[in-house]
Image 1 (cartoon, rainbow, N blue to C red):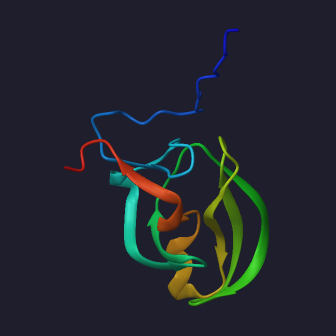
Image 2 (image 1 turned 180 degrees about the horizontal axis):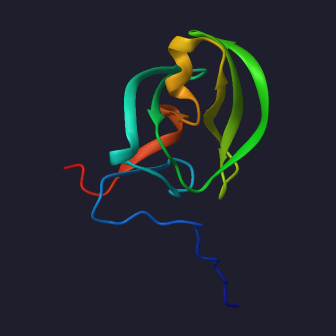
Length: 119
């Protein structure tokens, strides 16, 4: 009996020469370290990072939520490979001081690991 294993194919692979963040559950690439904006965010499950752009991530429908910094329209984001919810995307900020977050992504540390060249 031959056991067939299916290799993982992700929608996007980040260059192996860059430090990257990957999904802790399936190792799909999520973001390049160069896209990191801030490490000082709070997610629903602890610390989170704010990124300018991400890959291999899908978005749910936008909804209004009151977060620590006020009212925002956000969409939950999930890993396209394993479907784990990772964080959210800021769609709209209602307060002018929070506009810089629009179009940016929060990924909770509980759902990602560092890959490639962090030594």
